[in-house]
Length: 127
Image (cartoon, rainbow, N blue to C red):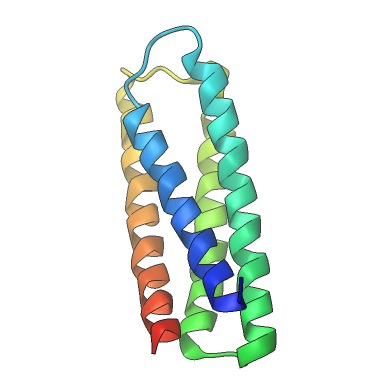
């Protein structure tokens, strides 16, 4: 797999994990929290994979405006996730809490922004 394909695959994996979060956001069974912890770990792994793939891509193709934007967006996404997870450890989540729902909405907005940046990078590497 070449570096562009690795970058594309890492961004797609991130999107799939985000979709899994959305599908499971209203779960209330006892296994839900354990699943959430696993998703959070997968999410962190995917962020590392994106950074690694971006670095490999830039080593091969050079830096670009889209790549710099992706790196900056990735940093902002990692910060947003870290703050969210610090404020809302799995054991403290009450999915009915207005504060938790507001925090999820804010994180989803950050995720949408990151997806837009990622899509611009994917468009740039497709040229």
